[in-house]
Length: 488
Image 1 (spheres, rainbow, N blue to C red):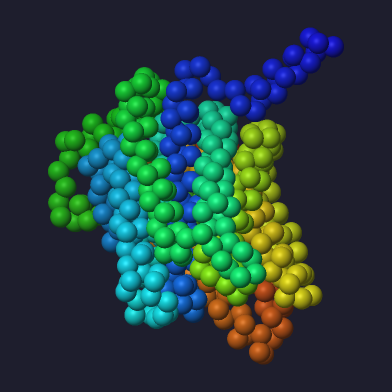
Image 2 (image 1 turned 90 degrees about the vertical axis):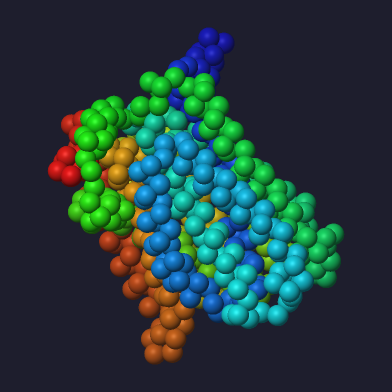
């Protein structure tokens, strides 16, 4: 019995958390970096919505998402240029410093008596609210997205199945730690009177300062990775590595004209349109974001109506995020790795829209009963949707980039994670805004059912085709995008 028990524990360890010896340092440093990045992102994402709606107003949230999509275009072009002139680790270091220092600056001005939270008058003319929103809205594509791009470039398809769940689990711990401190210690308040230890402005300032400090640790972890991890362990998908090495030699002898230089800045967008595989990734990301932003807007509005202070609203939103990361950590540690290995990429991709469909049916059914039932169900749906995304869908989607060229991993991905997701968010936000007005002529429930049935049906079709293409590519040892790069 004892021998059998030991064998079972060893098998469980191997199945869930075992990492080959030659990859342990790399995975540890990546996990620590992701811990800090997601811990920070979890807080600043909520602060972005909470502070913007408190400073500018809830009615401007949909407009902000539209403008964010437009303003990110020059930021993407700059990002594309930096990819050509900087090493991958250095680029991630740069953006970690930008958002770490930027967070410290925002934290300083949050307590300003005129432009910060002490001024309680909401207005579309409050420029600080808009700057804060646009800057923090780039955190996901330009830091979280960049982390994944860097990780894809140094990870093989086989290693991804074992290493990605470990890294995602560490990021969930980062989210749990950050939200625990924020909503259950710093921003704790009396639920009936709203009485709290510190002012709203100080609460939010402390959060910006602490999370920025965490983010500034990332360059240190990256420096350690460069020094300690052997260069062979930084190759990733071998077919893509060999192709990039050959292509780099060709690029050195090629002089670009003005047109070629411009083309290189938008080639990520060109490749995204040219390759159905990359458009498929855009599709599954966009369908998720449409649903995600609709649910999040509903949640933010309901939290605002139920809160007496800004800190109470922020704490309520962060409490949901605590559950997101706690549930996500459990799923990642116990189920993600085994489930993906058992189902395969294609069927795993199909699981996501199937679960989303069930959750949306639950929410719309609950919203037909009472406002209290709608408020309770929207929090539950948000928690389960986000946990599913972080623990299962996100690492699954990210692994799709592994059999692609550097241009797709970095440049096309930056367009997808920024412009693509912002456009999808704008669609979801716009639908949230117009669904109510359409309800004056049609049943609001019929409008919701038609819209989300269409979105989820298209999602399942794209997921099926994308999964098939991925599995064939890996089986054949191909590199998606190689033929285009060879023409340039």
